[in-house]
Length: 327
Image (cartoon, rainbow, N blue to C red; front, top):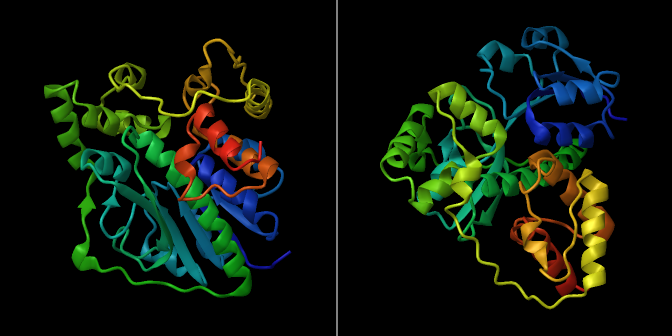
């Protein structure tokens, strides 16, 4: 076990997964969070602290993941080596909030995520790791965030390996190309939605994760009915309908066993495309990341920026695994 002190600050399934990775190699880990799931899982394994404890602890590294607390100069000065933030958008083009929503709204063909140094200017620090990925035609903001979360976790694995080797290489941002999306700018999309509630681009941009829906509700006192929005978006299934029914049934069972769902495979209807992220109250972003991790382990594959578009529903997953001849 390595002696460096690590501090994690923030919330979400992504931070939980990053802690899972770090505890394998580091003994001294502190966490600043309001996330009840993280506190429940790690209450006996790691130490929970407040942000004001940083000066006393003097950690070697700090990792900020979906964190809404502002780190002051004195907080950052308490960290001996590096303070790093995960940003769910490509920098410098999509600094600020709701980057996945703006990417969909702006009809971007690609998006990205990165880990960067925390400096006094928001999302302006040197970039340590970054990955880009394609946005598919029917992707929603939630789909983009889910892909970004998986890639962010994969990047964190690399960061931990490089941290152990003490080999970090940073890239400066070209801040002349910086675009910053303030939280209040989100009102523009809400206003456009109020005028045209059938515009598919706007609808896709407002289909958000439960965490972001809560942020929107808290900031703007607006409740977005994601299920209602989805009814106006028709996803075409262009995948091959010919498949081995026994293998398909086994894949459904694997999903049910992994995330404790109760999906049933209908051989006559071939309903694999309906078995998808958010089609069951237990298949949320938390469970999705867990399921993708289980797929990587069981089938010995890597889910990355090149193939992650094939993992949002069971039909796509089956076809991908079948094409690779690993199912």
